[in-house]
Image 1 (tube, helix red, strand yellow):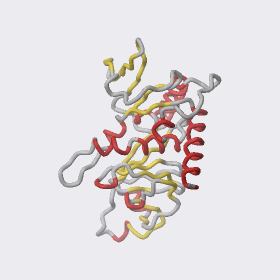
Image 2 (tube, rainbow, N blue to C red):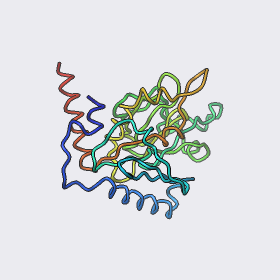
Image 3 (cartoon, rainbow, N blue to C red):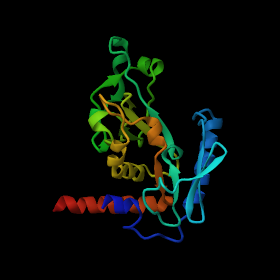
Length: 243
């Protein structure tokens, strides 16, 4: 059911919706503004996916190549493929030095992958201090950020922040750009959990890196359709729970 919904098979396309290709242009403009305001780091490379002769081609670092073998399923004509790195600001966290008491028992929530619940996260048991936030490689992720676990048995476990929070290094957080509905991103990542686990590496504790996540393909519908799809998914989940 989830896979079908994410592919646009359970909702009708509305010809009045803004094309996803237009949405991408608005997202690009927002990214450029954030970079100019020094609120976002300039990416090392930018990906653009275009259709030629009904085949997807990626333009990156001045080179163009067909990526048809990467595309996992067909999408409606008014959608477009993008890399996950193009839909939000992704960042993994860190663990402040446990031996420094000035870093812990503060007021800033600090999330570990065990705190992820595949749903809305409204409370986190551990806290760090402002000093830790300033001196360690942690980012305060705002309400609405989408989180995904990258290490071990929890790979692919998810959460959406209802409170601002930092994370440890085993968790990657995405602050979606305007035009990306965080719940649609959340359900897409949920549908791809098995694929993320397949891409994990490491003999001791398998993990999937942030680089692999942001390079993963994402089917982008128009913003209104993202909302319709999420509404359908949650309606079906509610009906299943009644059984």
